[in-house]
Length: 216
Ligand code: SAH
Image 1 (tube, rainbow, N blue to C red):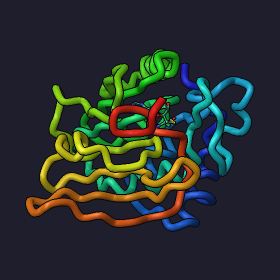
Image 2 (tube, rainbow, N blue to C red; image 1 turned 120 degrees about the horizontal axis):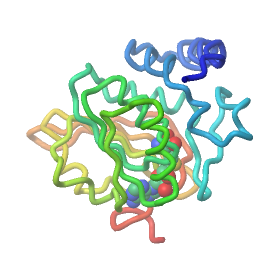
Image 3 (cartoon, helix red, strand yellow; image 1 turned 30 degrees about the horizontal axis):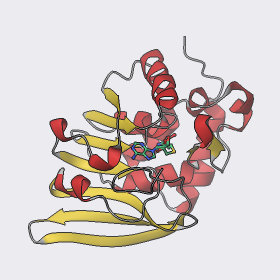
Image 4 (cartoon, protein in one colour; image 1 turned 45 degrees about the vertical axis):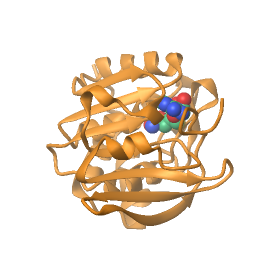
């Protein structure tokens, strides 16, 4: 059985942290109203699950602040029938939000422990349209490409070229790019003439580690 006692906290999160700050995409707001964020974090932190901040998860990683999840999700402009690639499964929360707004989510994680616990939650919540694998996500997931949208939830020094290759024409990719202390969210649109970059907010993410990321 799924615990509904956090519904009020979720409603407040959506109104006070998302709508109040200009998140307007209906699918994003509906998904975040529904996904039980508290099930993606450690029991000891559950009372803080809907707070306006990131929280620690295992392996020294973090689950992003709800507002940043919403901002990145909204930027992808999903309508319901897309195939979306996520790099950095972490807790699985972002993938769960996406899974309610598109056809299928492909998510890649480089820490086995995180992958295993995220998969358990996906099963528990019956999010059967999420497929997750262990790999260096900076190389993408070539067998399942191309993707309509790609979201990278760790900060890297550059936009990994394999990810742009694996995006459809007209597709969108969002990634925090910059140094290890501070990055900016870049929204990339792939066109037949090349890529267009929109710069959104300054953010602080954990490291994207891999061939086209930071060294381990
Ligand atoms: N989307 C996650 C955020 C997790 S933090 C959530 O909703 O909880 C970022 C995650 O990216 C970490 O789990 C980290 O291990 C992972 N990561 C970093 N570099 C990666 C890479 N090259 N490939 C796959 N995952 C990576």
